[in-house]
Amino acid sequence: MSVSSPRQHTSYGHRESRPPLAPGARAVIGHLEQLLRDPLKLLRSCSNAAPVVRLKVAHVSVYLVCDADLAREMLINKNGVFEKGGPIYEAGRSIVPNSLVVCPADVHRGQRTMMQPAFSPRSIGAAESVMSEEGEQASNSWRDGQVLDVLTESGRITHRVVARTLMPSVTEAIDVDHLLEVVKDLTRLVALQVVVPKSVRRVIPTLDSRFAAAVDGTRQAAQEIIAASRASETRDQGLLGVLMQQDESGGARLTDEELCDQIITLFTAGTETTASSLAWAMHILSIRPDLERRLHAELDRMPPGPISFKSDLGNLPFTCNFISETLRCYPSNWLLSRSVVESAKLGPYVFPAESSLMFSPYQIHRNPKYYEHPHQFDPDRWDGRPPTVSRRAYIPFGMGARGCIGDRFAVSEIANLLATITRRWSLRPVPNAQIRSKRPYFFAAPYGLQLQVVRRRPLS
Ligand code: HEM
Image 1 (cartoon, protein in one colour):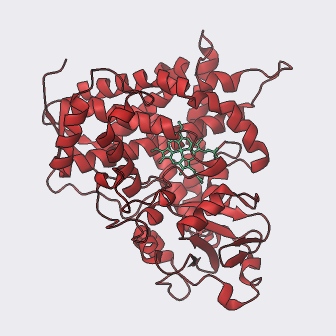
Image 2 (image 1 turned 30 degrees about the horizontal axis):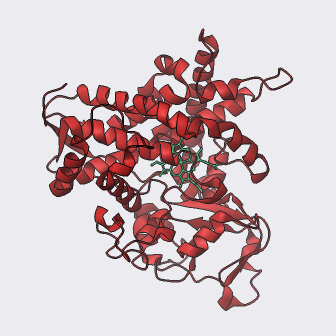
Image 3 (image 1 turned 90 degrees about the horizontal axis):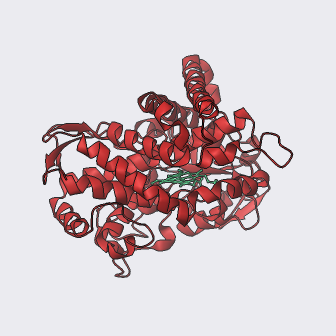
């Protein structure tokens, strides 16, 4: 936790009005060991401690907002006091300072308006055939009985979908495998930047130098995309084309540095997240044949071709519930943060300016206060039966003005990829293969997941 103001330790009027320390803090290091070894367990242990708890690493404290209503209040941010900031976004700013995902509130509206058309229902409709084609192409290349490295496969597909829909002129020029590697490396190292305070990193300088090298590698890959787009004979029809347009005075709308930031954002926020959700969904299907049968039964009734978010998803209730439950149990953005701009009240606490507040979709989704048997994967909890589901405690895409711009794109993509994959293949677990999910990096993905694909029907 690299960001915190010393003021936050002194400005509480009454000591008891300060959020309590989260369970398990150790002398000197505080929660560092838990954050490095099993942060999800630490988050679960905080669920019922208090509406907000304090996490401490060495001398640095941040606050974890555990209560769903308080988290919503912070995200809706009516008074503009909770700005994008805190440990997660400080690390993000050192990679993509000018991007939609980290930019400050005063420039956010303009950036969001510029990018929004790429995520309109019409654009998503157009992207659906690409999603379906990419799913088909990948799953047609698999052999019966093949064991897949699932995150690599799903990452390859989602990188191609983002490239083809948002920057079509450069798709063939992009080395997707290289991009996957640099992005994966970066998200792994950024997690350490978040958890390990600057003072501790100073003692282990290789951590910062490896991070700097990963940032350089990613920026270079993004520069190559810009160069490929400029070299292309046709103007890009996707989002990249819009971002590269000239302004009214004929000048560049965005500098190359700014373009680079937006490209990296789309290739991280828009690919690793969806790839991780798809991989978790595939894992569940492999260990729950009852759910696999139900998904097959529903999707087999659909005609071949893309599934439309607008007109088909309403007729696929089980598929929708299955996706909702995947995003509840395995939200890829498991820990996010905000910074307090000026002294602000949240629930019973007043936070001084520059306090860092964290929230965790994972922790809120797994809290027994909001979901019955929260650790059980149960798509039927979404079928309308109260009171097993608490929609106010469902935030896989965040909410408010900084909520995910790609939420519909993502759900449509997961539905299309699941449909194309499950039309051809049944998924089977690989004996002794282990998922490493205890220590999530920046995104909580099923690292190491392997699955065997078994053919269901001849290829069409
Ligand atoms: C399952 C897939 C996805 C998940 C779980 C997800 C989750 C999230 C969350 C939780 C936020 C809000 C972060 C916060 O409030 O601090 C967010 C923001 C964002 N997401 Fe997604 N996302 C997904 C897919 C996508 C896709 C497909 C794209 C684009 C192609 C995308 C682009 C973005 C961007 C640009 C933001 C920043 C929005 C802003 O600040 O205005 N995401 N996402």
